[in-house]
Image (cartoon, rainbow over all chains, first blue to last red; front, side, top):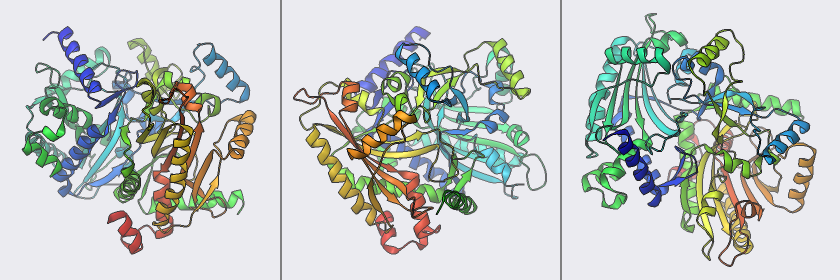
Length: 308
Length: 308
């Protein structure tokens, strides 16, 4: 399938989802409301992730969809993914400035240029608020830390692919500790993620992957990430079998975040980190693709896994 | 209690919540992570709202925390609340512009001024994406519509009051129909909301209220809103008995949104709208204030209502 066909298949699936009422269009590519049926699948899958990962004793943290801009600036996200970030801006003017804003709006001019950056930035990945939080607590305990997060994330990449939303939800488990602890965690979830998704009766594959680094320097980072096998993805075909969609990802950051945030293990070493991420909308879209839009008609085994 | 005392009480309660681990500070006033215990209370309250409102046959819609900028511009929010809105901006430059951005960041200069407004704006209230969605469907059925939404909302009002977050969650039921249908809905929820919150054993009062309209013209709008009794709030003391916190609100918009979005009833009239909103974090904060930080020690009657 060439790019034209893939794009057509994405547009067709999006239209089907809208027609079925599962996605609610908003007039912006990659920004959708969802029906109660869609949300029920997301909630059931979220509960499934808890069933598979809940026994490991993770600390639950839930952050809003934005983070401290200072933390964001320190995270080096802007080095690698400036094109995906979203900063939140607001109006800080007086009544005269307000009249100017309204006049511009009325006349169809750009009224946004006087908006000023606030202290908050859209969360690019659910784990970002976790590292400074853990860093503030001082050295890790001997067993390290395991954190459970779930958050809306924003990435500025308008697309007609329903599996590439600008605002989407990501559940994550994050392991912070010694290299051994962290590598063991990622191995565990590479295996467990495959097994868990297997119970949902969808075709899947696990492959090495890279993040979408910006620019020419980014291409080198991507290559290096692949060579070191730092990122794996669990892929499920949604609108293309040749270009299946990453629904889970398994990331080993080495000591990148440990260095950035000064997180130390009990023995004084720089902490390593890894995370497993679950793309909630993507998993739901994969299930609707393979089992149909009527969840009552899904295979009995899948219904049992999700609804018990 | 004067303002100084109220501010001190707010700061003290915030510190207690952070100390107990229920709120996770992020370095920005009004932006907090929450523990699993806090989230459990939010989820249980959410389920309680469903128990009281679920039999009315509302259509469930779930929107992400941002909406189409064009819809936002048409909503007239900027006329009334320019100071609270948050627009999402992003980087659209090339590699040269990227180097400039990184140099500014490195040198501690403002790197945000070249960020450009995207097509999306933070959702200011959970019901905003609903009106254009309903308008697209054409005239209402004879019985009108009832919608169930739940969304993160953003308001740029940094505060040390833990009950005034910049990002918070709002559950809403929205009624769209004839004036009679809509007024009946609001009356129903004024009664039902009081009864439902009564089962949680917290002191409460219902009073007429106004939205925080901007500027001098806004003061007139506030007065008019109060005189016409368009907005009521269910208030619970959290950090002050003299200035209790609005935890639920009951809003009659008359034909404001119907006119704006061209929503018509079955008989061709302009639709009226009303909504009841539940401030999820505020209700949780009120419960922790009145029943303590250990949910296992909450009164048996309250535990039964929330956990069954």
